[in-house]
Image (tube, rainbow, N blue to C red; front, side):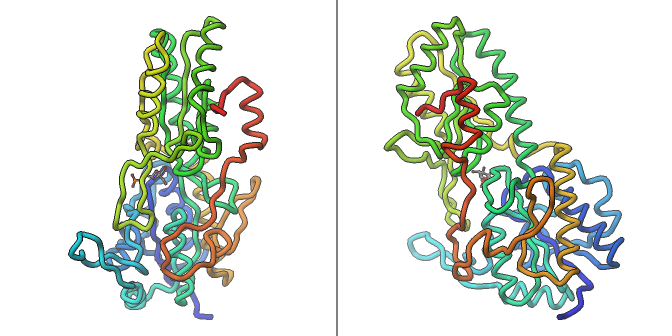
Length: 376
Ligand code: F6P
């Protein structure tokens, strides 16, 4: 096994809080504990292809742990194994595998191993680079908390705080104006942000992808609250939620991305449908959108991010490859990247497994026990 003297780092996919805590943890460990050199590629995998990087020394990572976003910048495009290089006559993309170019750049820079920080798309390419021979360790990032094999991803906790804070504020208008306030949150096809943010923020109705909803049930819940003298309601809807027998609401198709479908707008549709059935309240809509991705990292995300970074370097130096650090209970351990995102064909753009909210599980049952409706 080749000795590791220099590590490359990439942050890929949507930004979130805690990315800089990971960079801080891994860089300090690499330098202080193992005497390694560290460079950070800019804008995710595109930095590997363009050979665009910056040196990460102790100065570069000083004072960044709490900062949102990533000092390395990021991109949720640039699958180098299926890279859009030109347009065809119909405006679609032509693709080719440019991963060898990226490997060549790493060799020239004497980079011996990669630490890749990202969600399922980014970690799929991490698996594929590991298969090509460069040792790779993945770090699980996403506000959606939808990666399997880890209890949590960093970024999720800060987003939950933002959602909770927003719901606390939205209560003011809901109560004062006797309104039904629909609040859309992110999460792609899973309802973690909606359910945990909704419970913490006092939502009356929470709509998640795992439990298709029925408009009649939501209207009933509003009436029930009217009868109790509570003439307002907060409805939290996950961007991936859908009506029974309905489909998700697509905001945009991003053709040159590995994950082409961007969800969004279900809250708007729901608001209009509810207003058509509810006469005695105004129904208003707020989409929390990118507010959920930004801002100062919570204490939890700083610590878990830092611990993930430290563990990623320790793993590499123990000779492990193709693994992802993860959190089980309060302990950091690791798992094969192939177990997390599947062992599919190199370069494939389809997504691996996902961690869903259990529609019959404890969390949903607890929420129902305190009177929250899921529209089912
Ligand atoms: O995966 C993180 C996430 O913020 C999702 O919750 C959301 O659906 C998506 O990214 C938005 O992506 P984009 O930045 O391309 O709009």
